[in-house]
Every structure is written in structure tokens, then in C-alpha cells.
Length: 174
Image 1 (cartoon, rainbow, N blue to C red):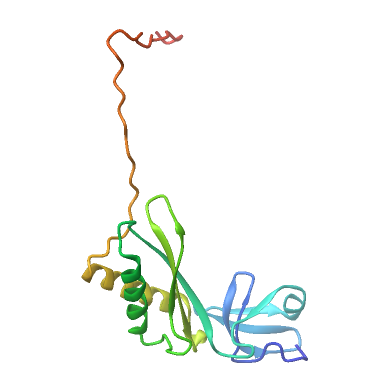
Image 2 (image 1 turned 45 degrees about the vertical axis):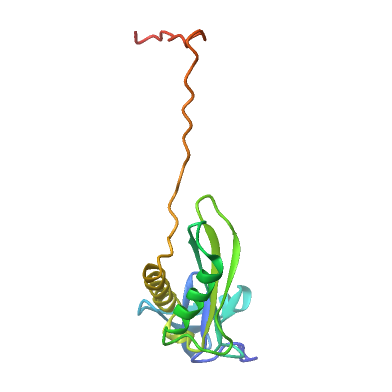
């Protein structure tokens, strides 16, 4: 704390607590969470536990928004639409620019991640991620990009007429 690794106004994460530092005292740090609750974190926890300082040297924070599309989608078009939709969200900054990468193939989808930057983490991360997802959904809907849903193929094998038929085994309830 004497090294000023956290200071009032910083956005930090300690365990399950996320918020901005309101004040520092000799015994604890006061952190205001996004839920409006003020958490008093003992200085000992700030020294012995991992502390993520989202704004230590820069207010820039990269946010990842994973998503998937149906495997019949034009993936180059999906990537372009995702980046364009992201750029329309007010809090997303232009530099560094948003990027979209294919990360793998799932059971029912092609998996991608949209990465974008914000410069105001004190205003929250989940809410901006939600705005980006909404912009993605609207863009995909307007451009007929199908979102994935579980799909299963069922093959029915009929037994041959001369093949032995399964026998029912009696149990104690019969």
C-alpha cells in the first residue's frame, strides 16, 4: 500500500469483490462495488491475496465477449459484422480496435471471441459486455446469421425379419 499499488479511484478485484477504491486507511481499503455495497477489505488481504488492479498503469481494459454461430455461417461475414456492431457501442474505444477471432468448433456451433477495449472500467464491465451482445444479436438478426442450437442426428436401425428379437427379462415386480 505504501508503494501506491492501489489508490483511490482505481478499479480493483480481490477474490469475488470488484469495484473502485473509495479510500484507504491504516487498516482497510473501502471499495465501492457495482452493486452499491461498500466493501471494507483489510489491508492484510491486499498484501497476501492476489489483487487485480484494472486501472493500475492505464485505464484501458480489454473485454472478451465469446459467442457462437451456426456452422453454415459465412465466417468472414460474421467476423466483419461482429466488429462493426461492436464499434457502434458508445463506450467501446477505437484504438486499439476491436478484433474477432475464431476459437474453435463446438458441438453445434463455430466458437468465436470478440475482443474490444474500454477506457472507463469504473463504469462497469458486465454492462458494456451486455450492450455489445445486444448489438451482435441485432446485427446477426438483420443479416440472417443463425445462432446455434443443439442438433442431434438420430439413426433408426430396423432389425431384419429373421434376426432374433430381444427377449424381455422378468424382474421381481412382474
